[in-house]
Image (cartoon, rainbow, N blue to C red; front, top):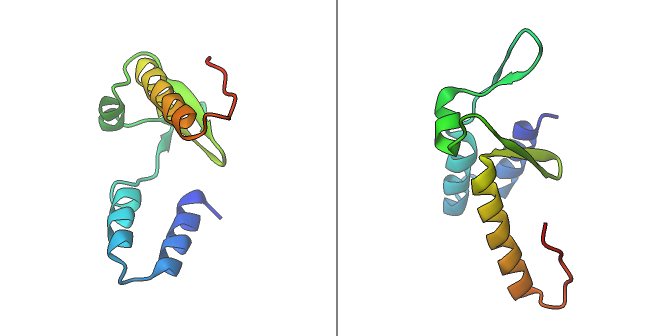
Length: 99
């Protein structure tokens, strides 16, 4: 089952009249669209998505379990740093190395 289908099934199970689900569904599905592939089989990311992410000539692919995100490298490093700070604050006993 495709990832978006799994999310839709999970959202349906939560309940049709859940106001939090309305916001989540809007964020997950409202702007979702299939991506095109070029003749070599590579994903073609639409220009508006690239602009939204601030990606021009470089990108970093970041694994997220069963999926991945595509980031502008500097923005990713800043977000990763913030996540690391929050993690260390929440779990001071956890040993996490800087990259």
